[in-house]
Image 1: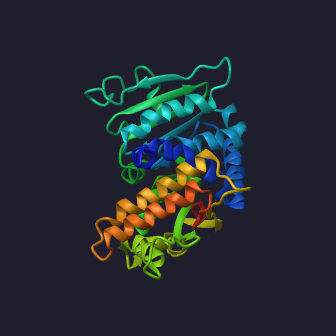
Image 2: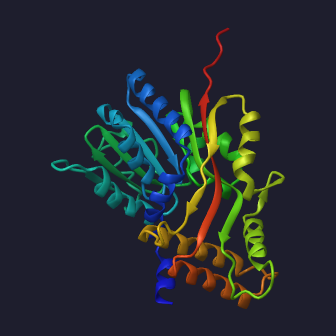
Length: 342
């Protein structure tokens, strides 16, 4: 029970554990095209390259980009990571320090996240304001050479809709929480000419565990849990948010300002390789079960006792290295069209 409680409470640990799962899941063709386009933009652009990440969490994507596109660090880059949770932004400073700072380098941090005025008095005094597009409800600016990462506490889509300055816009594992048509409109509005929109890990209607849970006596209860979990995600614009991955195709088809460059599947898959999980995989699986349990507790069509038995049965399978997990996602890369010449 103590192990279970720790997974319920530590969201930052979940985001850290998810890095390896995402690295395996990301569609290599779509991600490779994104990195290639980003490298080309960095060469063509004379000024600083500006990148926006909406719901950026603890900074795992910027670390991944720095790892896979090192040439990006050879020029000025402004990376605005926007998230509504201050705890995520605090954790991001440590994650960046651990993963992008090499020996002999120094990550300089200007922290205005908790200042009374959200950094308004200091805005542009300690660092060049040209590289901070918005203060939001406070921000932390992390500077490493020519890379400046601004961790902004704000609504990411609202920020996107008000700042048409970005060469690349990113949002990972987020759009199934919002209205995707509105979200694509907001994200598109943040893009300057000849820019990219990278949207990986969009959930697409499959959450599945194997094997069955013997503790659940009612036949088909596992299917009921999965179906209700998807239903609890809600619906918007006439579709279930659990089908965000496939519905994004329609959104891009209806958007004239951007054209689809590539898309492909990016399923999360976890299983006990050679009879064991990695520690991150165990934490990830326990966290997924916690999200499901917390979501379904308020569903009065599900018996809470059966749900408890089901969840505990799945946790036992994790402890015994028996659980297989699959969740289907879809990745997208779009390019903003240049205006036609009259």
